[in-house]
Length: 310
Image (tube, rainbow, N blue to C red; front, side):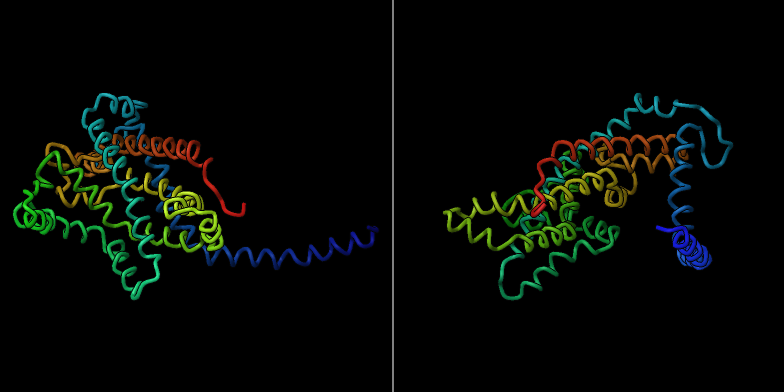
């Protein structure tokens, strides 16, 4: 390239700079509401909670720096360990069960029957009902005296348990409520099923594969990215499970602390006991636990995922 062409190129770039600057400023202007919202409602609370986790702060008094005291106190807090146990109990059962139910519904709704769109709508509806409203409805469904579920069980000669009044049945009740709202996950599974190449099903039939063989060797590999997504998002959602436990127990975690999950205990410390620093430390410990669990999932499960065509 000659010196003349270089000068011409630099002159064009200089002429373009004011226009590029104006475009950049206009872009900032139109995106400023989103940027301000991100900074004010996400970045600032995140950094503030990190700072508060090293302090003693009650929202009404002065902030006092105490270092790692909040984190060390968690190791001797029996309620914290109880909340972690309850959280992991719900997680271990609700996440796999939710994936299985969503996959089963997707397999049923992937069939070509008359009125299939109506069935898809019906099964998807629970996932768009507001969480608080659905929790209130479930409080009536699970009522041990006049609840719908126990009335159905009594029709078969089964004496229904006191779902939300028994320490043995309160966590299964929360698991049941979480599985009831798997409509979003069902739609994702249904989309994955419809992406499986029909040619592979035809080839497997020619090779003599039965229904189970086609499902295990064709459907599951193509659905594995969706299953990984469901596992990771379900894991994160289980650690953040809050609204049903709060509404159904009036924020107490009753009976006998059986529904005192980590997010609910965090809420109690922040907004009932006003231990903002202690609650912030809980939040960051939960964040670390979620990160570790997610990394382990990707390490031990992610490597077995099949990405079709990749």
